[in-house]
Image (cartoon, rainbow, N blue to C red):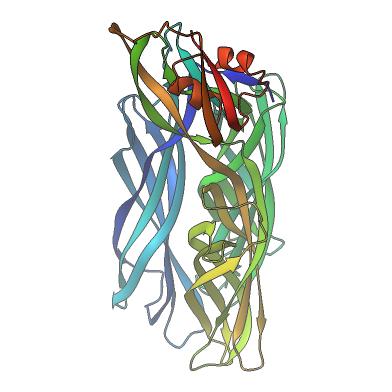
Length: 511
């Protein structure tokens, strides 16, 4: 890697890392064709993003939707009935300084809490909240100090990254999914898991390909009612691809592609067994290139008194890809009833954290949220959900205290087994994707003042001086202490390595 003196360095900085919440309230009266409510089986709030934009003054305008899904049972019936509603809202959030150019945004959406109660047999009241964790990053140019001519300059070589290149594009996709069933009554629960499969660099462009794995638990229609007594699972892969314009990208860059789902909706067709899938996805890529730069860290003049100020720079080294697959497990207990069958199980991760643990081993922690739909021994549908904190050591050897991790954690698959005591053991396959980079600090000279009205005193009585030093000194420290130049000191003492530790007698030339 070639070492270059820099007039500017580029620093990736987080300019906003916060959370915004949105309360959800729904007072819903059942239509006439729906039976009375006997028991609320489950209720969920699923937040999604319809659109967003950032204004020139650093304000994020976000339009969101919360999909409200309530499942309930009628009296003296083993059928499940569904209530689907949408709650839309808009947010305006101040996320960036005015000098931040095109911030890079990432979102994490989750349900905070949800309560649903039947006010009467014909009316439900839903109260809850969802939240969005928003992180905004910007690549800031930091101009280094121009050193006046004639000064002695000490530089430090640092491995760092150049300007971070990035681009993103939103993609709309619609597909018709064949379930193989005669009909679909309604969707009981669903998920969309994006995955990047390939990325290629071609002429200032990044070509990203991937898939969105769509899975759902749907109810089979009952011709005599709007409910269902049986459910089936379906899985489909929706291809996604995008061409991103990234000016200046080369084969020397490390490219980190991501694929995320902003909005996702499944619309069943009762009479055909086809589910219409609508996806709003965002395809993006970041590109990093390693550099070795030299920063001025100390200066002085042999002619005049000099003062300087320094500024501490926090620089990222070249990123290393992070790709780990872990298995997270939890036990879900069915209380007061016996399980006959399980229709489907789901899991998601909330508040993921990756850091070095107490023993120095990398730890992945967070909250695992699991849910199970099925039937009990009497044939009545049931729903169980559970949240459990987890902490697991991951097999990554290069995470240290000053390592920064940028990653996304998602569940790519869930399985279950029923133990002899009736407990359901839920196994979730978690995928960690992202980059790791070490943070290097460098104190660079930010301002130099040369006092030309304060010349240094000269002693012309002798041309050479002699000093005795220990192994803690080097050419720079001796030359600065005796007001000579490093070049003259090295030539006079036949020294070839400026960084070498010096000891013994050193001849000090006068300049």
